[in-house]
Image (spheres, rainbow, N blue to C red):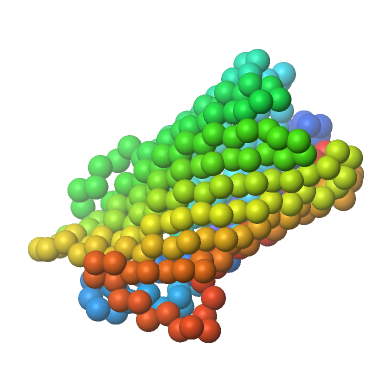
Length: 286
């Protein structure tokens, strides 16, 4: 997968001009989600914080014309899995629209590629606030073993204050997999969070405080249906440093300071095991 990602970046860079380009590479490490192995039994309903998720992903953004950007890359999400995408973004005064055809890649052994579309719209009142929303979906139905269906919806409202931006966001994700002929699984997460970013003019460091609430679940649909939700309160922060010459390094960490399992969930989380998610990366502009 990393080799494929590298080839995509190499091809895109080779056909793009050498100006107004951004490269971003990041890594995600966490244990906040259920693992990718489906087990419709007591072991599969037990949350121990032992399923570690790690990825390496990245993108390249190229300005094609005034108000027109292209972004291509790979993304890996613990719910939505691997996706390769190519995005076109149009800027019209205070309105930005993004259309992102994508392909779910190698997320099941029976179905290597699964096409879909993502769309986002953002409207900004300069110096006051902004609104944005969007969705993601795949097109193929879930009818046989190995098929899967991805959905994502998000909405956000943000306001600008002196030396800061405050944003409230809602995200809902779901991935339906036909694991076997007699078993369908649905991974889902719904998250609400407040992002308070602080900065100073002409100062290279930006910091943010993150507070949120998340409901994570996996449904096992067979002869009967089993639901295993986990409710978590999150607290974290984000840090970025502009080193000049087009280079920005960033890191974000969120910790679940309270976790509770409902329905069929069995919580077996050791008191000494932290539940967290972290993202570190670098952006380079030239």
